Amino acid sequence: MAFLVISGVLAAAFYHALPAEMAYRFDGGTPDAWLSRTALLLWTLIPQAFFTLLAYGIVRVILASTRYWPAQNAPMPSILTVMGNTLALPQIILAFAMLDIFLYNAYAVKLIPLWIFAVIILVLGGAVLAVFFVRAIRNLRRLRGNTDRE
Image (cartoon, rainbow, N blue to C red; front, side, top):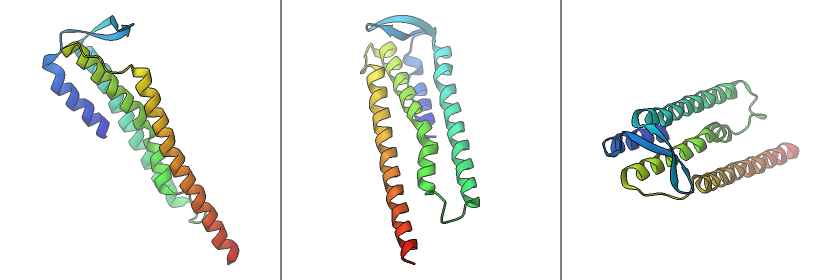
């Protein structure tokens, strides 16, 4: 939800500074393709809304399904919630792309290439997931150790 709000704030803040026709694709740092301001805003805000609704639905289904699992076999709800919120990764990348397009068209400022930013975000997201999985494995081993002693 946060990235949908951030994207909406970006769109509102930049709307009047943007030209009617905006460059949205670049080849070697020069504009390659153009789109109207309204169409570009729709192409960036609609996917953000879709990802937000999809993430909300996934998290709700996961949390609702944990009620029916036996407590000793249930995965940690926090891990499941994090996994459901991995849809925030493409939202972050889309918000960065939106900011990059807006800055270029309003002020002729280019940020780092999108692919570099995407790799950074995906590696950080993978690291966060790895931390949660390691914690879950440790908890599972600890629980198994406690049940073996009993």
